Image (cartoon, rainbow, N blue to C red; front, side, top):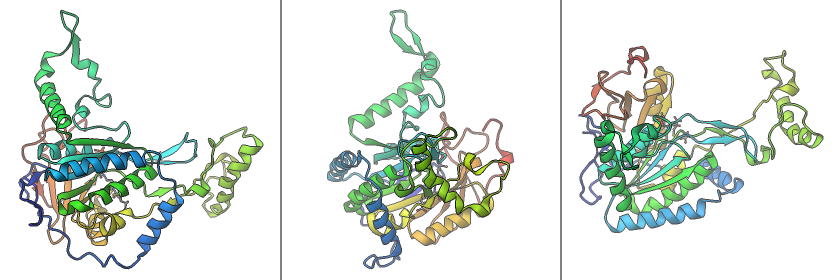
Length: 385
Ligand SMILES: CC(C)(COP(=O)(O)O)[C@@H](O)C(=O)NCCC(=O)N[C@@H](CSSC[C@H](N)C(=O)O)C(=O)O
């Protein structure tokens, strides 16, 4: 079983198993973090971002809910994990019609949250609105229409089909148990701005937990966004824009001038093209590790599509942010394998045996993975995955 062995200072409690596997990843509290007393460029970027972007309307409500949840479980001596899940969006208009999305169904986060709950954690599930949720993910519209699991009983009641009864009853009992014990708090986000404000607030609330607080960042987070001063109010027009719309869109057109040397499609006149000018999102992981939750246990995920760079990028992230674990995964094989990159430990690929369903499959979480020192060849995947 993979164990997050928390440092000695944490109250003794069973190690948590997140992925069932024979490997042992020991996470000890990071001791070599830079001096957090001096103002760094990350501090300046954080201050500017949160001063220049509007707090989401839900921030105060979610902060209150999270504080009550954390206080309740801290008083019970229970470990708390913040699981982030799903993709953040980057709106292109204030009255958003178009947006740039980051890929994520929420399967990784929702499944991991179930395992944390079954391992005795209290879970704050900060998730993309309408993405998969713990337990209900097994019956969500995204995978199977839940009505296909039901039929009308002889007395007109709604009955689960025989073949699904045992599994559905198990999931329902787990779900109701989590609800009854107040072990699961679900908070939705949509945009990158929602996500960053709420993440910062919750991470700061978790600070008193010290290493009993685990931050498990599985959300697919935007790296670029449209800053407020360049965000148009109304839907960007493709044709027949009124003068006022032309004027407001003019700001967008103006920015095209700076892209002259990118003009790679002369066939399409400039006025017909939409060239989007994005700024980088502050590298918030640095702020989180050094300032928001400096004593927390922090696990981030690194998503790549090129197997040649994944481990390097994961190691770079770990070296740059000095947190506890980076779980790397490739888009094409994310359901079958992940690589653990931890300080002072060799990289460890963990893979679901190909004869079984996926690492986050609906039916059977594998009772043991395979270890390897190299990624899967995407061409080796079974049909249909
Ligand atoms: C999104 C998936 C692949 C799960 O997929 P579903 O099961 O379909 O939900 C997840 O495993 C993952 O890699 N999540 C992390 C993806 C991500 O955006 N990672 C960031 C790092 S965390 S965002 C941190 C920010 N960019 C910074 O560096 O400060 C990256 O790769 O760059």
